[in-house]
Amino acid sequence: DGEVTNDNVDRDVVIVPAATIGCGKTTIALSLRSLFGWGHVQNDNITVQKGKPRAFANACCKELEERPAMVADRNNHQKRERKQLIEDISRTVPNAHFVCLNYVHDRSNYNSIRAATRERVLSRGDNHQTIQAGSKGPDAVIEIMEGFMHRFEPVDPESSPDDGFHMVIDIDPTASSRDNLEIVINRLYAEYPKLFAGQDMPSSEDMDAAIDAAMKDYTVDIKHE
Ligand code: GTP
Image (cartoon, rainbow, N blue to C red; front, side):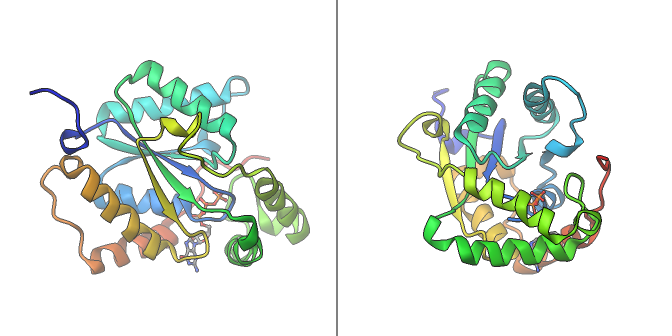
């Protein structure tokens, strides 16, 4: 009867990570792109000098013109960023459904998160846009990572702006991207079956292959000096 319930959502789904550096945002985004053809905007590829947050939101809206879902790939680690993204996208796409990919950061778990994300980022070396671990040296990289962790504001679905999320998927930043990918797909499949447009659930092997390709193929388009 035209009523919008999650059961008939088949487009305009915006996946919004809340994360810090090295949590695996891009790996998940590339995997969703290869499995389902969903869109992906990386903040580092937005090169405007002024109005970058707005330009990022506009690029996300543009992806939705061609693809049913997309990943807004930046850290969104503060409420201010999540508010800006939800408001700016909603202005252009009023029926957008926002799904938070919540890389849970409990202060009590910070040492494990540090161990996992530093290991990934430092072994990535120069293969990154804003943080070129090889050229900056590990201390400078760790300092940048600490800044994000220090500023991280946990997602609170009960209050603004996080009550703007239609769904919050909790994932563990210390878990493998493979395990996190499966959690994300299962939750989205259960909540928005039509989003998958008749595609079968990917097999375990499909997900393995998507993650392997994402970790191998991730080359940088634009490096900032
Ligand atoms: P930033 O863009 O720097 O904020 O990072 P991100 O959150 O997008 O993380 P990304 O997906 O780029 O992953 C960081 C690095 O860890 C990359 O080199 C990935 O290939 C690697 N990586 C991602 N997931 C895993 C995993 O499950 N295991 C291992 N060993 N490495 C991973």
